Image 1 (cartoon, rainbow, N blue to C red):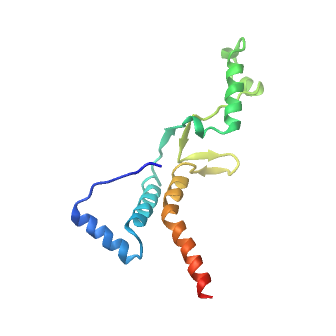
Image 2: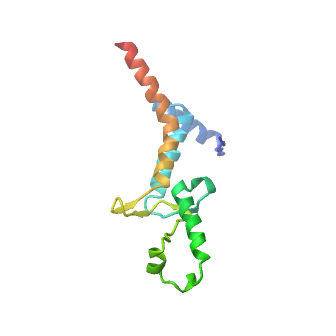
Length: 141
């Protein structure tokens, strides 16, 4: 796990700490929520694209990439048009991640990048609270 740090003036730190306290949160929890929500808002109308890392390819993608590489070595491959390549089993494998991807299955665009990242970051603050709330609620009964 990596650590992310930011520098703030003493005054700004004090204000954020008091805001967190007024919301019944630790400052670290508020920071997770602000970062998560901020990513959602910042990239709501702005498209971002990043290259995939090796572990971000599915087994299906890896198998298709292997098949594509084999097809690309066949004689006359470069002379084939897209439909002919597709008929032979070629299928493009996306080498990047974006927050604005059209899904044939959904019939619309969706966000497989920023939205899940935002949810994961926010969960660092929300999950422990939800667990402790459930525990305390059960104790009250």
